[in-house]
Length: 453
Image (spheres, rainbow, N blue to C red):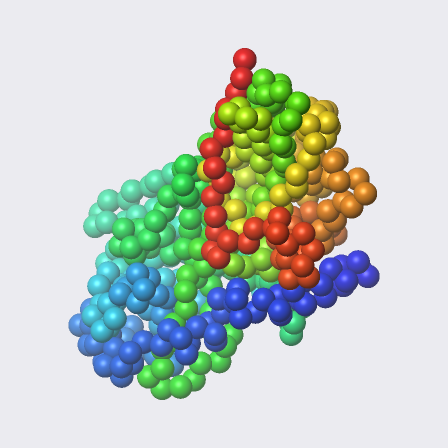
């Protein structure tokens, strides 16, 4: 317990220092992102809804509990208006900046978990999401197990259409450590279940050269903890953009074939380096943790370089489970290595090494090649740190550890978030600052050389 409290306090201090830079909270967004001419906006919204809803549904709308999610720099909004029912039922409509509405729906989210369990225990969302058209003639039902839909049923007229489950979680769980409430948990639903990326003007693809990453745009299942009571005031928030990476889509590489390339560059006069990278699941939010079983743990990986004259080899290598996140439990599974060519990153630390140290790095990686992947006890961050520290014996890189959401035995884990916080604090303190990269939003690593025979 003492170690947990120390870790939590450290994270709170770091998060507090970074609050102005990383916060995406609704309260911070209200003054910056307020809708222009809110009275006119709400008048247009209400006119659209009066013409689209049954009078009984319109009378249930609580416009004092409305919140807008902004897309396309304020050209498009998803407006959520809570309904006065015992269920978590709300209206979700797409509008422009003037409040002209289109494609509205009535959404009901039901969590089967006991409310106290949801607030006080590590969990995944289990329940139902039902979506009705505004006239309630059509509906779709999503049965959610551990954050993912089982099957999706659509009723259109007299026809029932069932589709397979999706690759991104419909509801994901965050763990957030704040200076006031300690550790808190919240459920977030995927807005792309209701509107396509094209409709919202966002990208659902990956970064430069890394198509295996996709993004979900999420909003809180229960966003009304902020106490909005002002008439005709519509708070505006940015969606939480969460990066997901499916290991099943990443081809396994031969670690030995990738490392063999360094043998073709002479050691005499060679310049070598190793760099450790961290990729957060949400850019700018190093104090946000997710249930790692839903595919959003972030990632830590290594870049190794060797240069001698016109000979140059660069390899980006990551350690992964050899199966998808959706089927993983907190137990060891078979591992694999993947080429992290073009991977996104949020922070890195580079260290120049000698050719002899490069051989130590290679030997360490080869010795670890058969190690099982364990999401809470030996994950990508554990691997990368062990290799990085193999040539940093006198000054090992030690990062804060945390109990990750979904871990039920109280085991503290090394995480990409902990690595980011360590590198940020080092940069702020001027420790190896010239070798630490903290891109404004995110950066992308360069190409890998690839295998050598």
